[in-house]
Every structure is written in C-alpha cells, then in structure tokens.
Amino acid sequence: MTARCRHHGAFTLIELLVVIAIIAILIGLLLPAVQKVREAAARLKCQNNLKQIALAMHNYENANGHLPGMAGITSLGFSPQALVLPYIEQEALGRVIDPVNQPLLLGNWPFSALNPVYATVAATPISTFLCPADNQPPVNTTVHRLPAVGGNFVTAAGTNYMVCTGTGLNPDGSSRSGDIRAMTDGLFWYGSRTRLTDIADGTSNTLMLSQALLGRYNTDPDPPTGPRRQAVNAGNHRPLAPGMGVDPQLTATNYLDYPGRWGGRGSMWIWGNIGTTSFNTFLRPNDPNPDVTAHGNGFFAARSNFSGGVNVALADGSVRFVRDTIALATWRALSTRAGGEVLNDF
Image 1 (cartoon, helix red, strand yellow):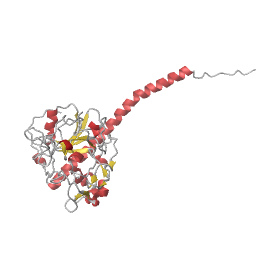
Image 2 (cartoon, one colour; image 1 turned 45 degrees about the vertical axis):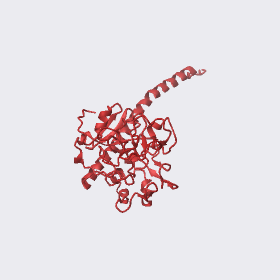
Image 3 (cartoon, one colour; image 1 turned 135 degrees about the vertical axis):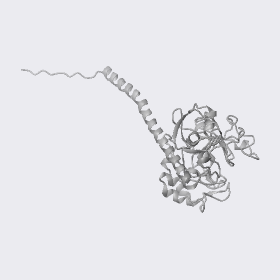
Image 4 (cartoon, one colour; image 1 turned 90 degrees about the vertical axis):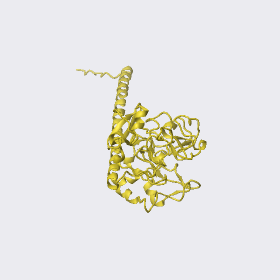
C-alpha cells in the first residue's frame, strides 16, 4: 500500500502580513500603557526624594534651631541641600563640609576659586538630589569657570530639587528681580536662618522645595529647549539697581529678544547660588516663558518632565503634585511664609 504524502498548509504572504499588522497594533496599544507605568514610577521616586530632603530640613532645624541657610550673606557659600547631607544618609560627604573652617570658595568674587578640599565632593552625584525623569547628565564640566577670568572649569554634580525663595517680589508687589540678598517672603535667602515657627501661614500652606530641570551646561542660544533648560541672560542690558534687583526691573516678557543664554540651572548641588539651587514663584510651574537672570538675580521657575505639573514639598514635610494650570496668585501665595493669604485646596 502506497503511503500518501500529507501536505501541511503554510502561511500565505497575506496571512503573514495580517499577523504582523495585529502584532504591531498590540504593541502600539501596549507602549502608552508601559510609558504611563514608567512615568508613574519616576514620579513616585521623585516624590520620595523630595520627602527625604524635606524631612532632612526638619531634622536640621530640630538640631540647629533654624532651617539651613541659603549660602552666607552672599552667594559664595553652601546650599541648604549641601548642609542636610548627614540627614539623607550621606554622612561621609557631610563630614567633609566645614563651613566654619573651610569655605566653599576661596578669594574674592569674581576671582573666587573652588576650595580644593571640596573638589571630589562637588563632583559626586547624589541620587536623592536627582529626578529619574530628567535625562540630562548629572555631572558637567562646562558651566562653572572659577576663577571667573582665566581659570579652569569646575567638575560639578547637579540637583533637580530647589529650595523656595518666595515670589521674587517686593512686599508692595513690585518686582525685585528675584534678588535674595535681603530677606525674601519665602523660607530662604542669602544668610537666612528661618525657623518653622516663623511660618505664620501654616507649614501645610507653604512651599519648601520643588523640582527643576537641569540646565544644558552651555551658554549657546538654543530656542527649541531654551525656555525649559536655559535662562535668558539679561545682565548686559540692565545694570544693578541701587537697592534690590536691577534697573529696570525684570518682567515676565521684556527679555525675550535677548540672545544670551545661561545653562547652569541645577548644575552644582553644593553651591548656594540663586539660579543653581533655588526657585521662586514669579513664573508658573513649567511656564512657557524662559527663566531669566541678570547679575546673580533672576526668575527661576519650577519645571519637570512630568505631564501637567511639578512635584513640590511643603514645609510640613508632605509632598504634592501641583498642576501647571494653578492660578498664579495661588502659586505665589504658597511660596510666602507670612503673607496672610487664604488658600483653598490646590
């Protein structure tokens, strides 16, 4: 008896194309879900970082009687972030920092140089200071040239988490161009020693920290990303004012034609410089207008890569997600420690 050959059916080209199309559709449906899961995980990690830093601020205040200051009486000292290292399980790095006997910068500005004692510390990335949603490299060698004239660039590690210096306004509501050389309406300024008991508005209604995107580490004009990662440098167009800020004072829009850019946002966690480790609420979160700086002053917004808003830490240690659509008056009211504003839920 002759055995019959059985022919097994094979995929036709059309059937194969249909299968490939179905797989592509399934992948297309899956990717957004995966992306949402990743963003949710990154946002949770970011909030946890802010929570740790806020609690470290509380522990510092409990041990020292006041919150860590923003540099010294000028911008030449340590950041609040640097001073709380022992309270975020960074005791080894924290022991190196000695503000009394070893200043951060040596010499008079603008010829100051980074104290060699801190070269290694300043270049060390700290995971608690970095938001996982920011894809900018945390270490840079192209921003801080100290001394300012003829010196070498400093290798520095950055931070995404900024302390709040208030609204950037004078008590009468006029602009002070973000100048923090004198007491601000927020929790931090140069030489501040704020106590939690100084917060008359309530710790649950007062911003302590928020996030920002790391700068591009260069000073080249870059219109596509400038509003998010680079500040407009208006210093050549405005001299320092006799009092606070510059003359004329900065506003939200009148600097848009200036070509200069500054890319040092968040670029040096150890340094208590206004544009490097702080933010104010003159602009909304993720404001479409760029940050602006002039002579060490400026408006520096809270910014993130998260959809629709930024994470913040309040002075009571709680963490919230604030929408970009928040009313500007409410956003500014949140940044004052004793403004007397009445706030509804935000």
